[in-house]
Image 1 (cartoon, rainbow, N blue to C red):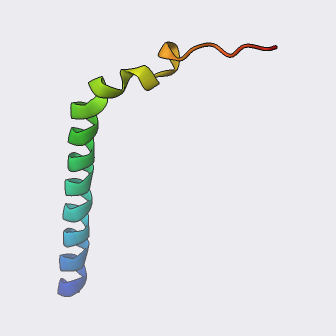
Image 2 (cartoon, helix red, strand yellow):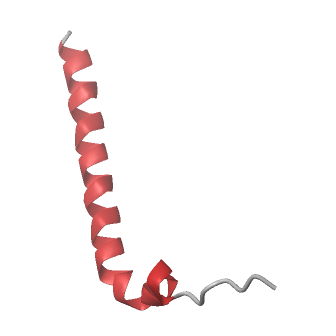
Image 3 (cartoon, rainbow, N blue to C red):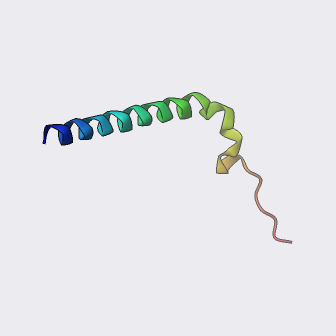
Length: 47
């Protein structure tokens, strides 16, 4: 049981660290990709 708790705690720590790293990456690079937002894309033309 002790080993199970240790593994569970390590998994939670790894998951939380991963989420923090991804969140910080997205927030730091969001300004560089504003042109990809749907409001900034050209409308489609039905020809």
